[in-house]
Length: 225
Image (cartoon, rainbow, N blue to C red; front, top):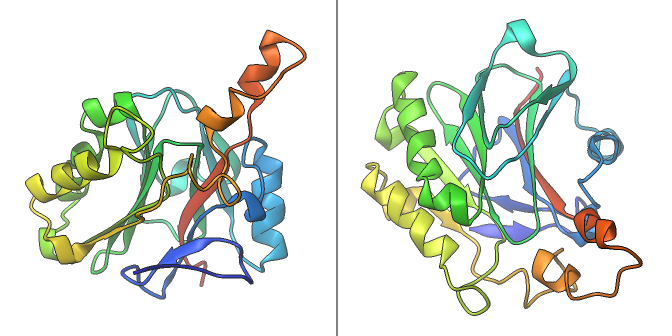
């Protein structure tokens, strides 16, 4: 079950274990466009981390395994839409404003992952490739839990991101009980979520301003203990 917290201002999943810190952002948790705002959020909410991973999202299917060799400070990663790590204190992040953020956890091997699944990423079967990456690291299907966060719904978009990504996860060997989903549309619920399709219809002073629309951030991290 996915629930919203008035304290943390994010949505969390009951499927993901207590030894991780995670959340799907909202308008109330802030704009994730600037990684410093993500840093401020984590610090303000007493999240002890050693690294924030900030991927350059390109609507692709490239997945990066973050290891202890490259995890310190703020880690910028070029052209990446999927992240996986087994390192404690490494906060994996993505930003979205209609695309689907997806969190992954192996309960046994303590591996976490995150992906940014828009139309192109979904067509490229990024969710399925994330599960394949977990399998390659030794995960077993019964130990994996996945949560799909707020995204635009089929009511406002010609593609059903939620349904298509759930289908990929099921085809990868997961059961329905291992997948948490968020049923509400980011465009319809604009008071709670940033939405690109709502932002692009607003008046802008210049064409360049259209690229600066705000996005909520999502994150997942193994506790730094």
